[in-house]
Image (cartoon, rainbow, N blue to C red; front, side, top):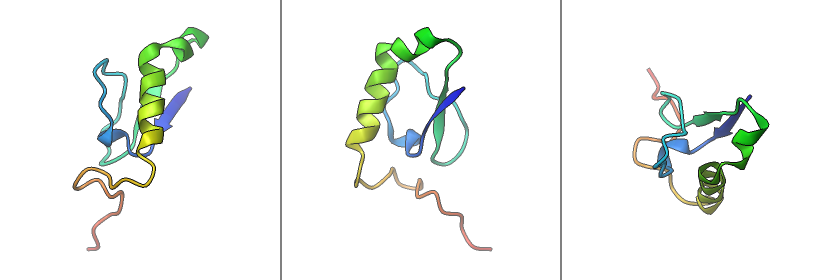
Length: 67
């Protein structure tokens, strides 16, 4: 199972839990129930909640350029 973060590229991730290569979205892979108890995952969730209403990092708007 994966736990996604829409503005994951804007989050500080000192434990390197976030995975993905997109311009904006990152995710954490949860392999066991114990993974949900990681302090660093809790910190990512709280940091993501604090981003509400803030502008994502430059270049991370999630919109594609028109061709």
